[in-house]
Structures are given as C-alpha cells and as structure tokens.
Image (cartoon, rainbow, N blue to C red; front, top):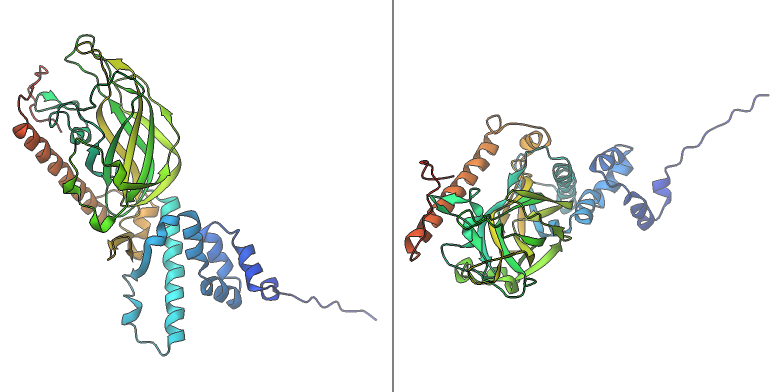
Length: 375
C-alpha cells in the first residue's frame, strides 16, 4: 500500500508574534524587496502595508524625512477629499497611499538618474571679510575669477596665526536634494607678483538648519560676519586636504547626504599663503558649488507652519523622469527647474552689480579681453 505524503505549507509570518515578524522584515533594505514581499499573499500584503514598512525603511535610511507630516498624491488627490464608508476604510487608504509614495520616494532617492546640479541658492555669511563688499562671499557663486573686468573672489581677514579657520555659509535650494560632492576653487591673485594661491590646508563640510526657523531672517545677518551660532549642524563630513592649485577641486562625500532645503557650512582649516604687503595669512576662494540630484519633478514639497513641517507632493507620472536619463527639453518640469536656477543666477549678478556700485574705491582689473560681463 502506497503511503501518500501530504506536504503541509505553513506561512511562517502568521506563526510569529508581530514584533518578531517586523524584526525579520526590517532586514529588507530595498523598496523592491518590500514590493515583492507584499505580493506573496494577501496576508503579507496587509502586513507590509498595515505596518507602514516602506515609510519605516525611508526614515531608517534618511531620518530627515521625519519632517514630512502629510502627503498629496496628485493623481488621487488628498485622502480627505475621497468619500469613504468608514474610518477604518479611510485609514487603510492612507496606509496604501503611504506605502506607494514612500516606496517611490526611496527609489527616487537611491537610484535617481537626474544629472548633477548646483543646489546652492545664495550666500548667507562668511566668518570674516577683508574688504567688503568688494571681496564678499557672494562673489564665490560666480564661476569665473573676473567679473566686469575686475577680480571676483572672497577673502578672509589677515591673521598672524596660520591655523585660524574660516567658515562660509550658504542656503541650499528648496526641495529634496541628494548631495554627493562639494567643489571649491581657491583664488589665484593674478594681479600680485608671482600669482600666489590663497588656499586652505584642509576643508570640511557641515549641513544643517537654523536653530529657530520661525525667527530666522536672512536680512538680519550681514554677509561679512559669521552666523554659525544661529544653526544646528546635523551632518559633518571628514576633513579633506586641499591642493594649492588654481583649479576647481571636487570633494566627494563618503555617502550621499539627503537635504530638505537647509544650509551648508564650508570650514576652511589652516592657511598656506602669506601676503607680502602686511605679512599676514589669508584664505581666498574664487568659486563654490554643492552638487546633487533633486527628486523633482517626481516629488515636490511645501513648507508648513511651523516651518519644520513638510507637505510632500507626489507626481507619479514624472517618476520615470527621475529614474531615467532625460533631457530638460523632454521633461517640461526639468526645464522649469533650470529656468529657476537661471533666475537665481540673474539675481546673483544683480547683487554683484549692487555691491560694485555701493563699494568705495572699487579696483577694476583689465584682463586684456573685451568680453566685459563674464557669466
């Protein structure tokens, strides 16, 4: 008599306590794995969605996303505008929405193919300035070392001690950005004998936010003085050595850093070049940029009151524009972003011109060219 062996299939997830099941599934660190897990069975789908595993994974990898307090899926509208049969149905729809949106957000952050862009919006302050406004920190947002036939750079005040550091602070662009590198070009004084380069020995970067966002007013901080005490720095990079070269030097962060708006501080550590005129050590910077990838146009944000809270807007029809390589002409939203960046550049030029008009005894330097305005 043949004995038929009956295989009994057991769903281990249903046999475990909730805490243990969550602990096991917490090892899934890819949004695609969560999607696969939710497709195993109806129970698994309800477990993944009901426990908000996509959101938990997002916050685990990027705690900055805890600022998000609400979501709008633009194809579906807000949950409150949907007629639902009961509170439990409404709660489940919110959980389903969160699962979909956070999975897409994590995918956009980690696998974005959008080309790197400068994410600095404007200059906030420098710890010191030698000759304001001629040598303002605003000049470091101009990629050329000449502006309307005059030298364009920021200079610190002179110091006897070459170990005295300097700091520069910048406002980052609105939106969600994944910053991967910061580029700095030290200034070569082409109008001085020997064309000395006023570089720092090392550089370090900090990223953070104002201590009191509601009370923070950029207009109150003079560009030529330090505002470091007004910020909380949540990320600090390692120190990077700077080369004594007249070139744009790239400093790649060990890991990409996610920012929702925010501010970046550049610490210039140690001085190399002494000025012959007064025997003091200076640091001078020609150009600064922070490079990163936006999750726009798939995601956008709106700052709520209080300022630390964020409304996340999801545009699923634009997700492919972030996950694949598209030109700005193919995706109108990207063209819009580049238009905004151009507007920022025009505003920068206006600020530079205003500084030239207001600054006494401006020194113009003829470089032998006839191009005039340098962009």
